[in-house]
Amino acid sequence: MKDVAERAGVSSKTVSRVYNNDPQVTDETRQVVLDAFASLGYRLNRAARSLRVGGDHVIAMAVESVADPFFAAMTEAVERTALERGLAVLVSSIGRDAERERQVIEGLTRRQISGLLAVAVGQDQSYLAPQLADTPMVFVDRGPVGVDTDTVLTDNFEAAAAGTRHLISQGHRRIAFLGDSPDVSTTRERLAGYRAAMEEAGLAVVSDLVADGCPTEHEAAGMTGRLLELREPPTAVFSSNARCSIGLVPTLHAWRRTDVAVVSFGDFPMASTLVPGITVLAQNPERIGEVAARRLLERMDDPDLPVRREVIPAELIPRGSGELPAGVSGRGVVGGSRNAGAHGAGGERLKRGERSA
Image 1: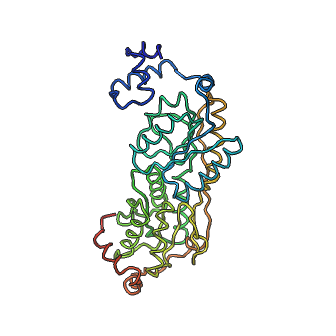
Image 2 (image 1 turned 90 degrees about the vertical axis):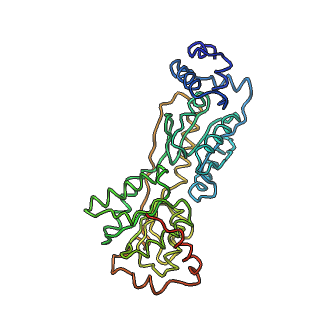
């Protein structure tokens, strides 16, 4: 601490405040101290620290939502793997807000955890630089920006391209993209994969068919209705995550438009029991969680391991919806057979909530 203070030209107390993320420290002072940490290669002795203050045999996990089926399955795998080492897992939801991400993760690292697994929600994780000197970290699903850590990811670009190619191979040309907010890195990567597959096949990417602002099931359902009401509706939809699919599929059934082909990035409950069954790109969250947890245990044992990026491939599972052939546009069906009971009030909501895709 003294060495860092001398290098940065500040007091030891200021170094301590920066290390503990005191909000009263100015950004300029914080950066000067962080640069001093980096230039000196500063690292706390974790073994000595645990002797001084004791360890609690807990690893923490910060995910977007524990209610999301993907993160729930991942968390279960992490807990199972951690239990093999006698470790408990403290799980927190960070939502979709960058400031909440920072508050939650900084709060977890102050709890003397043995390690951290996290999902990057914000656009900058450089605030974690001081904690990396003392807390082993592995990021899952979305890699961090501004710090270099172990990550375990899915190849979102290639998987989305493969799913889109699958629909193209069935003869579809008007393929819609339904996705989360473009602020989410995985959405951007999957949209890029969709675009690449369309362009590779010589197909135009129609702006009206790109709906990438649907962070909830509710919004995905509304956007599905809007897509179906287009003068030339899509014959197929590539859904870029399970949340969107959970909004998309019931809407297609309610509109009696099960002739629209669907490929979902991410599996979801009962997807295989529907008629037709939903073709999915299965991410295998259990495998991602297990690989990430084992990497975290390795880093806890040896903090000086080189940083590693591991990619878990997604598997295309054909169940019927993605294999529906392209046929005649179902505009007449859309206009005449909508389920009034399911969409009476909802139809008004969709019209009020219409926005450009």
